Image (cartoon, rainbow, N blue to C red; front, side, top):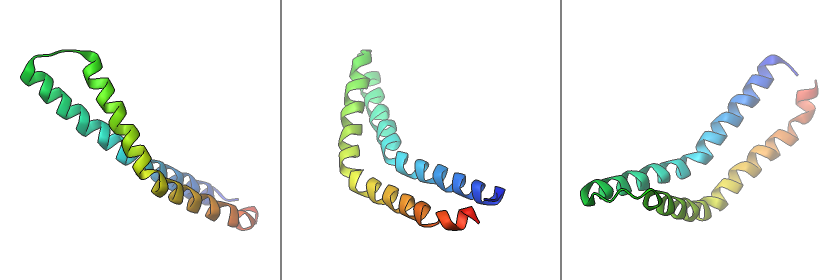
Length: 89
């Protein structure tokens, strides 16, 4: 296994993790922004008001994107396992 192969595998793994975490992070960002705007308008400064809706929205997005996420992970893992003979050379 060469240095280039290891770097390519690491690059693919990092890109995949960024792609898979994107929907959850974007959801947390959007919900947090909406809640912050509502807090600024109503002047309610309760910490749990930001935490609970964010968690609920992220769980919902996680459930909705789970089939896509699993498909991406399975494809990556299958390609990794199928290419083991090429890596050993």
